[in-house]
Length: 318
Image (cartoon, rainbow, N blue to C red; front, side):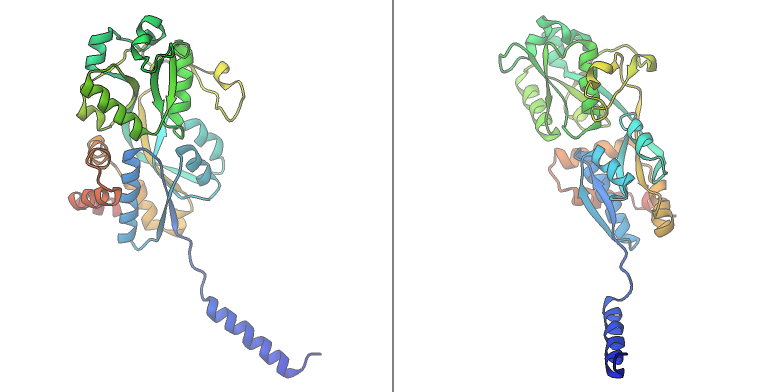
């Protein structure tokens, strides 16, 4: 049997450790920050609103597909702009236990392939399928390698994988080099091409500030037909490209705030706020313009947006 002094010392030691440790500190709410301009700002708007609500948050840059996987695994809590139909399959596959809640409020969006008006007039291109014609594609061959170039999105975007499928379905994967580049580089290339009157073709989505900067033409496609779309994920099958097809235009798109269901118990007021967020297309265009064109930091753009929309923010917090 240990001596009484030893037991007393042990008890005091344990009590001291417990005192120093104190109550468990809640982990911060993790907000993912995807790479496109508006998401940088909407993530900041959510973070600054959280600060007003005394909710500790941490911002983590993440590719959008990685962010969905992190949320399913409990490693992240908020996706500021979860796009559908792009990530519909991933959400269905990864959210079997209902960890991810998608807000009912969505922003209507569109995904297409665009050219500048000058490009359309110069080359005669009218439809997306025209890119499969070598005589049209050669107009976009800036490096003289025998194939034109088209920007299809950033490497981490879910839409980029689908644009690979669309290129194969329409046939222009044989005539065009499919460029995966950060959006900032691609938009700079659009600016340069527009200023010099050079032909350029690129994936485009709205709401987006590029439609305010340049006169663009959306290439024509057959209307969306679900029967002519069959998407296999790259991660699911080595023959994903051969087995997939997307032979018509995109369906009308929309994006939503998504958050971890655990927040409904851990931070119920904040979760209610997240579910009430209702951005308008004009908000998205304005904040992406300020961030990408005016080169303002995302934190500043978010703070300025909040100052102009205090009543809306208060309404979302109720």
